[in-house]
Amino acid sequence: MKFRYSILTTITALSLTACSDFLEPQSESEFVPEDATSLNELLLGEAYQRNDMEGFNIFLGLLDDDIEVAEYQTPNEGFDGNIYLASYTWQPDMYQMMEKAGAGHINIYESYYEVILGTNAVLDYLPSVHDTQENINKVKAQAHALRGFYYFNLVNIFGQPYNVNPEALGVPLKLQSGIEADPDFLKRKSVAEVYAQILDDLHTAEATYLELPESERWSDNYRTSLPMVQLMLSRTYLYMENWEKSAEYAKHVMDNKQFTLVDLNNIPLNGTDEEGKPVRNYYVFPTYNCSETIWPYGNVKDMFDWTHKEANSQNSVTGNKMHAYFQASEELLNTYVDYDLRINRYIVQAPTNDSNNLMHMAFGKVNIGTTYYLPQNAVGVFGRCLRLSEAYLNYAEAMAMRGEEFADEATTALNALREKRFDPEDFEEEEFDNQEELVQFIRDERRRELCFEGHRWFDLRRWGMPSFTHKWHHSKESTSTYRLEEGDLLYTVPIPDEALQSNVELVQNELPGKRTPIE
View 1 (cartoon, helix red, strand yellow):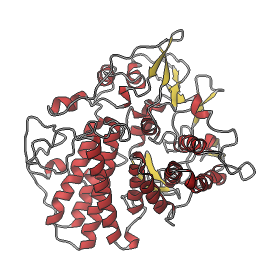
View 2: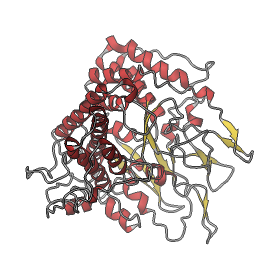
View 3: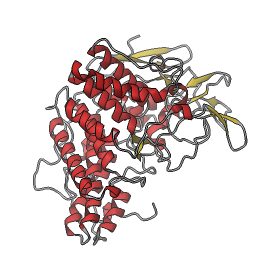
View 4: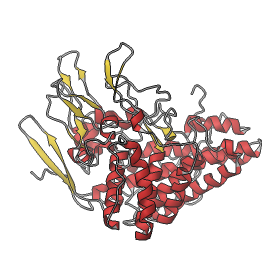
């Protein structure tokens, strides 16, 4: 995107000692949009989580149980393992540890509020532009869709799960680009209040999209869309345990003729690169070449850098060859049967220090270049996407949770998805004796299908915050185990220190003491 307006030069300068510089504009306006086209450009420049923007994920992939530490390797000179250990072992002082270890600026909280500021600026300007109602609606729908999406992520990172404690502290609701008259606007709202705003934004986006011609409700142009909004509504209602609404919106997406489930039987496992060398073909979802992709977003490095960093690299000074510090957990791999096509097409395999030994990496389904695999016809390199498979899984879970009378509908959706993940000779439709068995299978299926796409940590939170452990190699001879307890306080990520310092109205989450090894 060559044309980009800076929000910091579009809004009147204001200052407030109690507020963060990423919640408020800083300099005088040099640009006043006159039509929806200008606001459309502003959206792309300042409100979309584009593929050249980092800071929205970083360490979040290290928190859940789909990842474990790889075999020990001697680190390169100057490398401090605390950069990973801090979040991987759920330390209450993770930001200080990461900064001291050389991670630099890490503030996911700030990153989200910066793009929220972009959506707010667009919505603030919208009433004053002169354009057709259709063009105005296109901008309005996108801005509300993005703001709902961002607040959903924020509240599920920094607030407690909705189904556990909706009255717990969520995040501040910044809904204008200026300083509101309400002196409490910088205070944390309850989780329930934030969810209400998410639903308000998403429903506004939905209604606005429905006012557009059908041809304008979705396009492969990296913009938000009606099915993107409907999938987010399904996800939001699922987290709220409003099973009926979640299923309703999932079904809208499932019935959309623009999208079809990918049949992994059509993805050859082995192929060749441009030089004719053999490569393993792993499937790439965040591209519109994929028939499941509804909306790609985010930076590849931001989503996966810490889970695959150093993989298959060699230090030019010491000659020390490094493999990734993390791999797919044995527990995750054991949820797949051997003939499940996903295990070899979703999860990248790469050498350890022993080049004859391949390990399942803690990432996959994304284009990160040709070091490990050569994606077929990959264009538009993004790190994540909303895709059709989630709609099937949301629908199956919601229908199963509604009761035994809806078990058949849940099972049908589940089998429709799984049929595309097995060779026809190996596929057998699943049958279940009771609701408990069905629900557990759906949860396991969600883990298999959506691994390393940012769902697992949020799912663990809403499924009761179970206890699990992470092991860490301090040296070749020393390994420690750290435990995240059931219902642990660190299932809610601490608010970054910088955010607390910038906004005196913010209250930190309740934190446990320093995490120490259990063995």
